[in-house]
Image 1 (cartoon, rainbow, N blue to C red):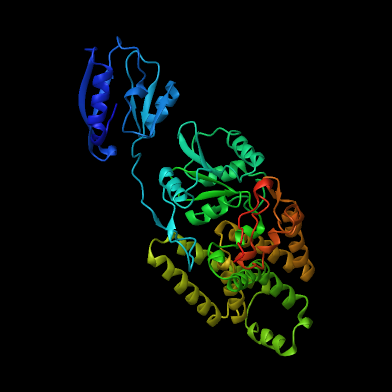
Image 2: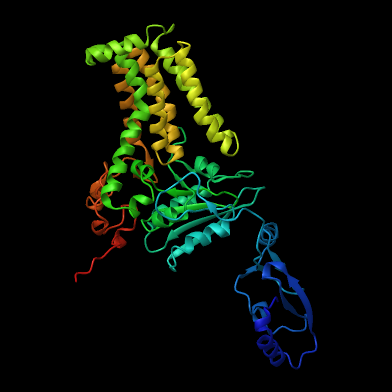
Length: 470
């Protein structure tokens, strides 16, 4: 087997003593890059030697596993590992290598925080596991690996805290992952779509993150993290509505600033989905609810616009969505410049050409800013789609259409669940955890009072903080 130099003398004396009467042991020098370029030794035993196993000669290596079948052997080789096969033996040994080349640890670009770690997940499954494990140095952290994809043979890992996670949720996760067979997938987003309980919903039933510190924090709350090889995005489950509106630095900052920021995010959610629809409803159907001076401002601003308010809103919203998409697709710093300059140029030119009023430019810009305030991109994208539905309903039925559309969204969210838990936790089902989840909802109590884990944790292990009296 492969041996490190520091263990060579010890191993040599061990083997010499064990096989002093055997003449069939041979020695070969090898050099392996994934063993830090350390010269080692391979000892192999002829068929005549039958009183030892392969593990008797494996010294100096810790990451070695037995292989008993051809499918496991094939998978080990295709995943960049070395395999030792000894003639006459029914088992082989997989020696873990450094794997495939990939990007190193980078900054989490899509989840910026003011305070906290700047590390982000990479594309290597092993690296991502290590990034979480260095934050949770506990033997309770378990990682179960699976191979999915009939042809891609992609490795995934299910991480959980053994003493905190609910066993029924863990069993359900494994069941859903084994419930489909696919040629291959290149990102965790395909797993998310194939295992969601309601595939027709616009709202995500998994939370995605690029931050190892956030994944580690949620593991301590009883959540499960699924990471995929070749993907820098981890899936977290189960989740609820409020989970998407929290950020890691909510817990690093004091309770006052964390509460204020959460209130701003909830206000941003409402305006991101309803502001254009409310503008159409008021201007077209209920102008009397506005002050007279404000109505006069709206009339003056729209005096030279050649089409109705609905067409004006749709044109401007589509224009800003195109600018946003172009900014994402254009590489580098030029993408940010296109987003800012494009918005200014299009808005200014539309007003000067009397194709849009200054009011609608302000409305659309505020709506875009509110959508950017939502921390999770998948969650924000759901409201971007619903926004157009509310615009159409408001153009046809006015304020009643806008309220009806919002009620439809609330009814849908009330019936949605994530692995058996209501999507509107802790508004719904808060009594399951003695109202503890309400302490970390919109209002975040001082950290000293957040003594219990969320409802997702095992009932027998909810205590996470004990404050000792001086």
